Length: 206
Image (cartoon, rainbow, N blue to C red):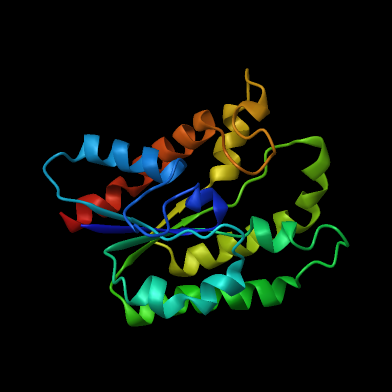
């Protein structure tokens, strides 16, 4: 069963770009461990093609090579924070309809050109002082992603909400010191939620 992790630096997480099966040090590494523990009899192939700095437009640009040609059984996508972050300096935000068009292009291509099940992960922002203002743009884009998920996703993982619930009794920066890139603790948390969420798809493909 071939599982493809796609996204930006949160998915990239320092992976070896010369080895697509290297899962870096982020949530894909932890997710793979939890998935293999849950289904020891299944032969999984895990592929990580997250690219640091990527926005939705970059995923569109590599749709053929890094999505369609891989032909995964399951593809997960975590993208969106850079569509905000890269425009935060001047608040020259990408219009939401442009963002939606780009993300829709990705999802439509997967639906039409592969047989992959689609798992969408919600972008998140840990509340750190210098990035709190990102929410004025990221929240509307998250709502757009949720709308697209209702149309395209087999599974949707509300990472931002799950993290917000988990902060109770914790310092949020335990999960991501800079507000965006998870610590090992945060990556393990996301990986565990990922493995729990993907279970119904794995069961359906067994």
